[in-house]
Image 1 (cartoon, helix red, strand yellow):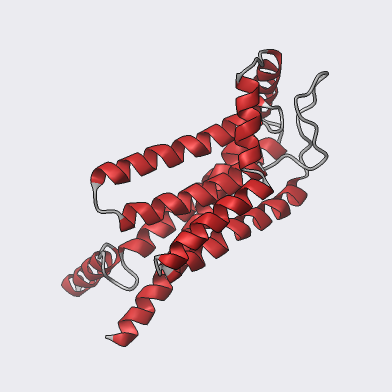
Image 2: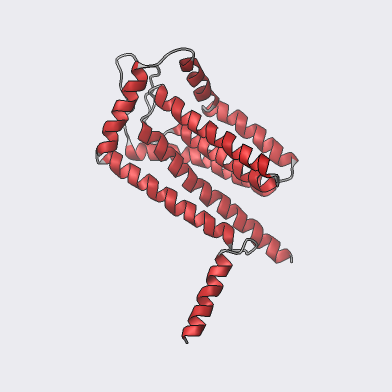
Length: 237
């Protein structure tokens, strides 16, 4: 009996770690990312709503950046932020969607359609759930009337660049291309997050929560689309 249980457990683990299985490694990685990033978002949200120590750090960092803003860094931060506004993201989304369409990567195109617009809509919903006010300064660099937590720009950037790097890492076998893609996309997400804190539009916890929540959402989208693709391919065999 113990041997049967051990064999079944071993078979289950092997199936979960199988790269080619319908519910194999891709589903396992997706679930791990979802659980970890979801937990991080939950902890940040609780800390912010509970006015814990991170909110004190948020205010200190926000006022430090506001007091030490200088050119040409301020103009650069405005540019990065504008590129990842709704209008900027629409252009980036359209360009990537066109590329995927021409590459006949229809499942990735479907993942893009869910990940980026869906992530942005989810962000709007979360803002209204938490209703955190934005940082306040005597001489603000930007003035916005919407809620602060989590950051919309950071959410959009994480969803977009996260999907982009996932596609290129899988589609491009060369490790130099893979590592370069990861470095560039990660840098872009961090720059967008920095720009929102630098300009005083968000607190540090806002952008951290946006990244965590977006990774969770990406895990759902990519895993779901990957599972759909594998199931359809399995039926054709």
